View 1 (spheres, helix red, strand yellow):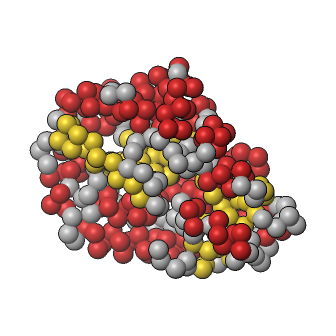
View 2 (view 1 turned 90 degrees about the horizontal axis):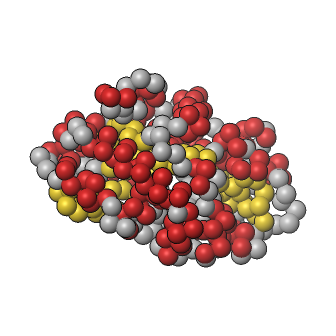
Length: 342
């Protein structure tokens, strides 16, 4: 594991670093991986899907559909015979694999997806997989009760993620300047317990339920999206490179239909769906059940509530110069010809 990188928050410097590292990664990975790109394959055969997490499994309603044997039949007309899931610790890492041709589809948070698109990666947004993603900050010190109590202190956060965007936005709104330390959620408990960091910014959405897990372990909630900053909620995205979608022109519409049917089924069988997430997680069942939220899924590929959050995130990233070149969300959305009207 790399040593954590310490950076100043609520400043252009952090987001510039994210973009710079992403651009460097894009250039390096593009040199050697394109021969395996989905855009170069006449038949998909094995669909390679990148996700965030520690297990190589699909989660969410789409993952539940896959567990019930629904995905492969739905994609068989596209020549898909297998689905390979590859997990990454963070969005920027996934972006490098996507541009290097090692993935066909990516499912991850809005911030790295937007930064990649604004840094020159020619992707299209197939659908908003989930919206109203929760995140929050926890602490051990009982005197830290609000974000203002973290003025001048250290907060761990996975840089380049939707959690990072929430934290920076919340700190900015509260007028707080803190020192942000790049740490993945799995690496934050020890330094938080030892006092090396004063707060931990964590995801609180299935399957990444670190926020709920830390609370169950006795750390207390200082701030959260749901309680304090609902307008800073994140979204998760399903994206693919334009070359892949051009080569396989019916893929995106097929995936959108698959997602809609998966969400419909999951909502109609919610308890069974949550049991599926519990079974496939190393987190305590209580944490998964606390985080599960049926209102975060829509059968529409671009639900209005999700689009509103996405626009807010893009505007924030543009203002912070993390997105190097602004772009139209409407142009980024993949809309099948039959439903081209907005």
